[in-house]
Image (cartoon, rainbow, N blue to C red):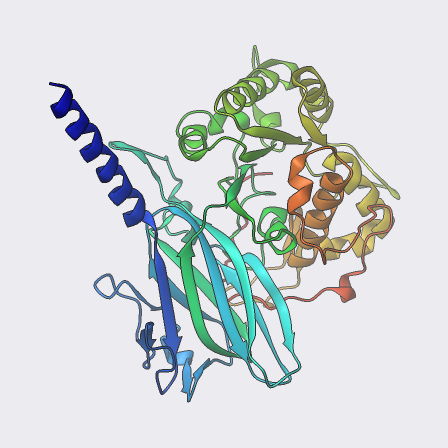
Length: 429
């Protein structure tokens, strides 16, 4: 009997080893008219993505690709997708081309390489970590996605890279990464906005973190703490590992919940406390962020529009002994520093016919432009730097310091627009 038991133990151990090894993925794609990396998948023709091949240029952009002797170029944005299982991946991109520039985004417009300037004839290599996830929680259970999320790049079964610039893309390596994860839980001011000109701080903070951490942005436009309860938080908890971080920012849509038990000190406090406790039970590290302000000026000062919700979150943070970043206070300082007119540049406010299919002007005082989203991301990073959270150790070394009382001017920041546009504003207020 003892011999049989030992045999079974050995077989189980070997089976586990095989399963672990099977999960380790490394894919190398070598682009160009000639193959230069013998062990790589050679991509000499700009073929569209298809489920049989499991890689290719996606979303109708293959025609934009021009194959060079070593690598490809494109005058306008192109998408390259690879079908992959859920997980964290290290992506390494090799670029070339003296006096060229390249921006690289992943999934739903998460920014990783902003306007990389190549000033040498030598190859330039950049790496970053991408979290790829899909709606499956467990067998028979999925995240309840909204109709607009069903086509969102974040929730499909692929890892998608978007290249915007004039540099030559020589190769792309995608390999499994054993990295800590930062989960983002929140509303439209946090979620990856997949269509221009809408943006959020959650998809810009990726540019200010190093390659030792992945960001799984599972926030949702229009979400409140109450609507996030259920399949949404279940998905986060199903992926959460010990020592992973979870940032929670809600408030914009929680204000709409009326009736007995609602309000800042009712359902809002109750569910937030529950989330924190469930995250801690799995060994995760929760961080609370008070909601971003709306652009609602009363003269030269900003009118508070979140009522008791920011203060309720501050009290929960103190009671539960978790890190708090007071983004409500920081964004108030930022908007008032810009003033009523200049602050418009931080939001989606554009004249008619600026983008395809946009016949009316866009006048939004809640959702950010790319400039505004980047500024709020810098504010979040500055809050992390000033905190005692271990997450601050994952801030990239070249990230600039930021003072919300002296925010940047709009003309100091430019980032290429992605290819996909929509005039319809995100859910939420």
